[in-house]
Amino acid sequence: MRVCFQMQVKPDRLSEYAEHHAAVWPDMLAAIADAGRRNYSLFLRPDGLLIGYYETDDDDAAQRALEADPRTAAWEEKMADYFVALAGRPDQAAPRLSEVFHLEDQLARHHAGTNRA
Image (cartoon, rainbow, N blue to C red):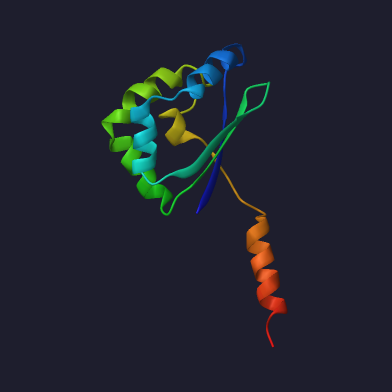
């Protein structure tokens, strides 16, 4: 499953936020991977709009694993002040975006439809 989310980084904290993400703590990297998230990317616009993307087999299970993992608490506490207020833990409370197009899915459907005899 592909998951995309958005958050808002405080405009006056953009460079600091980017610096932290240039070298995420190894324990946090391991916690993300152990929770089942992969192909994880963050994209930051100059006005602070942050778009995140990752893939996982079960997003609810990954969320629960990260919430329960003691390795994530310190990182999430450190990052919380960078975001415009959200209810709950920033990474966990970020609104999800609905996927409306995926090239490979449509190509596969198209090829499956044209390859039928």
